[in-house]
Figure (tube, rainbow, N blue to C red):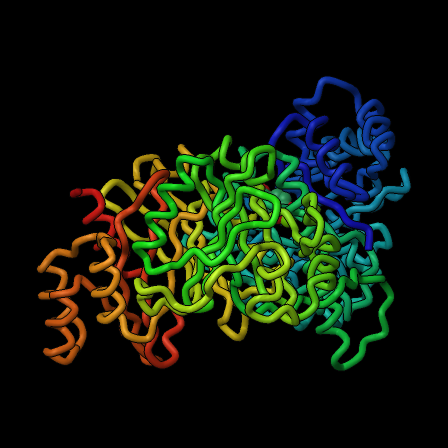
Length: 625
Ligand SMILES: O=C(O)c1ccc(O)c(O)c1
Ligand SMILES: [Mg+2]
């Protein structure tokens, strides 16, 4: 497909935007008029700059408040359109977007709208240009694609067609199924946008909260499917009005944008394969999402001093040192199936991360049936592969760079529990240590993200790792709000929690300002009896965040917990959540350097969330310390 993006979707000057989207592999742009009006240069110069970058200018937009106007306004608008046609010819843009009228002067008469659009198309035809008519969700008399299509049909001019924008259709919950019946060659342009489900004024929603396909809640795949069923073969473009993207570095936005189109194409391709549709366009076909089965290891970046602090901490958490690396200052700790690696090797990737972010998680190891296929999927979806230097007799497990710069290693399932570690480490006694507290697996890893990293992570985890996002929740810290969203694979063996602070003053925000964002904020480890495990951890010297008595009084009023269980939880400081599927019991350790802390969790039944509603109890307690 010819992949395009509206200039309004990115930050920067027009030239910077063009360079970023060209480098991300786009074929063309939609030129948003304001970007041109403020551009220092002529239309012809802009056309040359775009051409030199390998970009076509696919659309000039928008012409507003045009159709269905009283004669005097209509004549003036035609003149305005002629001046814009001059520009389009000079820059080489073939199509103009005319969006449905929002003016109180406009007349509710589809025949008048059709006649005036016919005249506009006739003017465009004289210059061999085309006009596309788009229904804005807040248009005064035309707000549905079906209404716009009736007008285009009635106007009946070869240089007038329809422009579709998924936002307008999906935000109004209009059914896109009717699109398939529109002749594909009468659809002149396709704009795709996703968005989170919000209940707010549709214009505000459209102008501030759109996101790339795969970042929001709309069925963008179902929409694109209908457009392809219509036989559309034109550009696939992104038109994203988003306040955060307006300030996010545009190189990152451009890569996210490209990833979102590749994801949209590949998902839609699969949808079309079911009742097979003769494909008139080539849709991106990456390797399938990898089958992932949980986290094998978490690697910390440290120096000598913080490696010693970490050693004490993880021993208190019941871990035993079971190996030293064959050639590097790297130590392996284990408990149950959990491997923690502390990497204090100078001149290494880990040391670079330590220098930049302090003691922090620098890599995750994900178990995977076919690591090379997983890396193939990731690079197809525009993630970078990372190859670290390997010493003699060491294994190289393929890795990719996650947003923010940490690594994700794909650990071959076939290596079993010890294969990877036997190759790289001199293993010592592997039995459970005397301080073993019954921690079994890595339940989830929670990341603290800067506000502009959340959408990037949602798309990365979906498109690259095949994870599904859960509910988006807002949680109160004493100093501001946190937005939290879990992402997990279908089997729920791999879970991440994405947290962003909506305020500058929360604990998460302060951690971010130390670590630069995108850092692991806590690590949740699972056990089968939280009371036994917590008692053991306390005996080992682990300190937990204390929970107010008021929490338990309230809990008893909210949930019908057995009194004996309630009093055990109160005594142990264990938090509780119940869903119809099961229960979640959890407790948080005090944090150490850089703000990182651990959570101990016990899932009962098929509980599928993260106890997020208890996070305010933790955050308030941490604040009162
Ligand atoms: O918000 C707007 O004005 C606007 C303009 C052009 C579009 O294509 C659109 O979807 C919205
Ligand atoms: Mg649009």
